[in-house]
Image 1 (tube, rainbow, N blue to C red):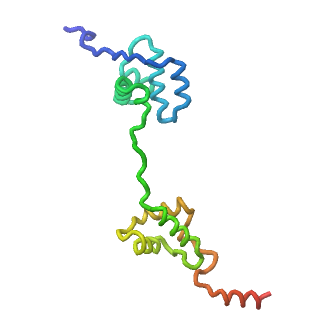
Image 2: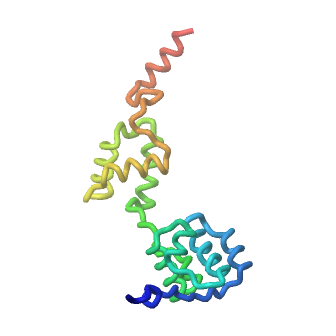
Image 3: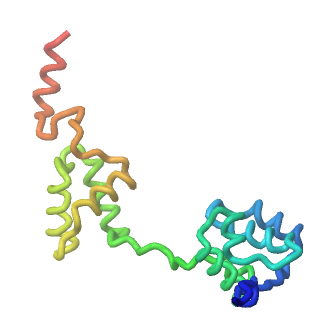
Length: 173
């Protein structure tokens, strides 16, 4: 029979270049989703013996594959690479500044205001985007940017007769 220890994988020895103090300062500055990565470096720095990915995973309560990815990224790219976010940013809005201004003007107009999101979409399709726009896109955009709730009843009727209102006010006491 072979001795099991001869064929067991040896834990990868990774030298953490940053000091313990630097890592603690860095840990305080990180957003919550990056704290575990810095915590891993702290654990590796404090340990006298090399830690396997399984041991790191157990200490940090993460998956062993995640620990392996983080260790590899640190070895290849350093602390900057480990803490960098792979996402490149958000998509630009399909609603231009000109369209934004026009929507705002129509929403605040007592005579010209939209009565529904469908009205708004039809108006955008006719005047600005012949290809149209998704209902959910415009719904979210209007609520987010203007706090508008088109489906809520208005305080005064859109087509009311101003002269009738004035004569009513004069005759009623």
